Image 1 (cartoon, rainbow, N blue to C red):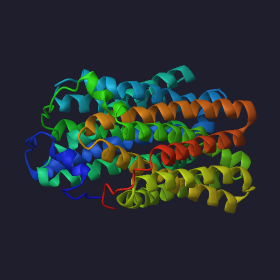
Image 2 (cartoon, rainbow, N blue to C red; image 1 turned 60 degrees about the vertical axis):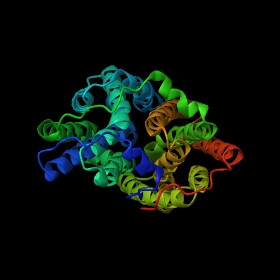
Image 3 (cartoon, rainbow, N blue to C red; image 1 turned 90 degrees about the vertical axis):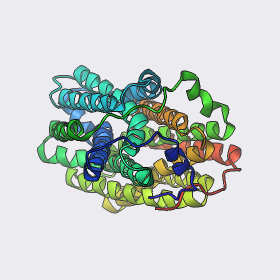
Length: 412
């Protein structure tokens, strides 16, 4: 989506420093594309274990609940890394920052692909957490500095598309590769793609000076604005509820809906397609009202999680749950981002860092709570827990966020 110049997104982009110099316009856009693909690989790698959970658990001889730590640990590290790296980077050339994060992503994928045991896998996932926090914090701003000011919204859209596509397609892509060649091949494929991204970035990324050093006190601004704080609280509940259940989506389809591995893989692909559609639906709703967008997202997500415990078994029931669930989660990124942009139009970097932190805290805590529920009472309990948390997000938004009714972004 290309926001108009009057929207908060464009105001934030206009506040960035002057564009850096690229050899040609084509080189500049290839560099932007390399960052977009890098964010796609990073987000896809983050969610690979969801579609491969049972395979990795069996291959490394751990329980499904313990395997959920592969989602929890990156979330913990990313939550700490987003604000910490934003401050620690100071005025360091952002080219060096991006290249370092891409190299670290390569190391993480290689460790995961060749992990001899679960402890090595956790180390790989912790390194990934640093990448996630760093990419989410730096990639959008760096990419937009590579092109002329008039093209910055387009560059931002390209990079956010990489994040969104990775979010909704990471699970089905990993499941498909895992079913064809084993779970290690999924991480190996991510490593190969990361090598290509790193080479392009080394070739095309120019020096990208920092606008200014971010102070630790700047990161507290979202917590001092009531509307922003309400949004962060709702996002934590919403995303934690989703991941309490989403981490165990593949076991749900296999064990509860009694589907074959081929059907599971097919439904995970359907989930990805539904999530991609949900991104556009969420963007359209945000253009009308950020409160309505967040409420619609939460209610649809809660309904899909409840449906998963009552729909019975078989392909039709599984497909209904997967489509509703996929659309609902696809609506989460634009809903959350739109809320924070409107809440903090004068401090988009601080808002972004805290939103990243909120997402990652929610991912980690949701996956952990879901693992405890699954090991204690079975998969259905994780679905019910997730639904309750998501309904809590809707309650917070409607009770404390009723002033959120003005549009913020144009629909895609």
